[in-house]
Length: 118
Image (cartoon, rainbow, N blue to C red):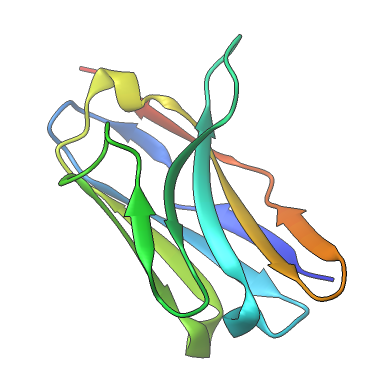
């Protein structure tokens, strides 16, 4: 079992920056692949950025060059550094951790609101 807690969301002006954190507890976090997703009302949740247990990263085209995902396994935490934020980045951001250990182990955090507005 893994518990995920997101933090770092808030209100920021266009062009500003935020860093989201996803703190995990309850299992060997370093074995998990982790992704940041976002969702706006009436739309499906979309993958923003992901990092594998080995450190490989990938990004949605809409955030490439602006967002950076990283992990600190010693702290059981994954970060999402978001720069040059745009109003269209406004959403609830969720952290997901998953791995296959005979079965799929899949966990979500409760989400953190990011609002980009002047």
